[in-house]
Image (cartoon, rainbow, N blue to C red):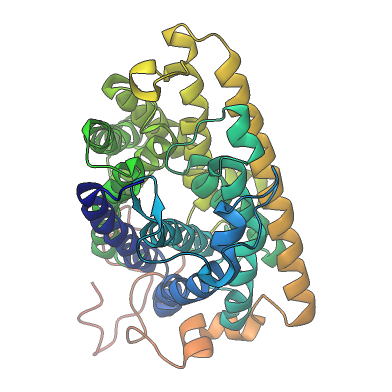
Length: 435
């Protein structure tokens, strides 16, 4: 098979776009935490890049995409053996395809970190990430995307990672949140995002990179990639509008944080369905995710699990929305075959999507839970209470991002707006810049 230069050029650009998503996520997450955890949160994303890269090149890619059984691939490409610069994979170099898939594995691992913000040992995270990327991510990637994978053979559709990235990260995040337990002060202290401009900058970088994430998965520079590109834009827009609409009706004011969260919810949901639905379907997927996820993030307070940055409420729930709506809105115009219920395909595809959602979620949760428990037993995963109170940046990295006394650490404010001064906090001569 000849290598297509146009497809290769587009995939090179897309790979760079997806890699940029991890620094974007670091900034997004960094803005969402309190001031004593900013550097640690950013580092948890950045350290995922080398850790997953090493694991992926050694065994991850081979287990995910080389020939094997329905459950796991073989070791034919361990250490990237047997793959040269001109080895083709669907009209692009296989080395490039492997690198593109590597960037997916990196961002998925980084996503999980949001659930355990402010309370995890950095050394334990460094042990967890490579083990998880092989035991969880590579296995499920094989199930869903490898031609020999059992879910692939069943006909489950997941174009760019609703199962492999979103549901896997959300399920794994829930497992870690349960193992580590809630932060000190959960449901008692105010734990607001300390830097909303960071949050918006991060989501802008994520949205930019998501075009490579989804449209790059076409592995070609063609009409399908163009349709996916538009679907990605539309779903992000409708996700934002859906979330803000809920805030306006429920809370009386639309917020910048809600806008950022809505964009992410819409993009998460369109990830599995971007190559399966038309533009109208993309609008429905994005809008539905924005509305549903805006309510789903409240579940942690009722169920008493501390998913610090709402990985479960946005990525798991948004992934579920996107995966299931394929069963309703998939059109043969996009899939060249399978159709959803609303396009004359019956309930068959919805059943396949539902089964895959349950199986993938359970496997990711159970395996992540066991890994985290083992690490907790062997070296400890949770910070001591004293270290957590001192701040994870200082105790884990011997650094701080800001001087003491800025937003994110006070008791709940009397003021109704995040931007107003906390009148319960004593003022001092050096506190003029508190606002």
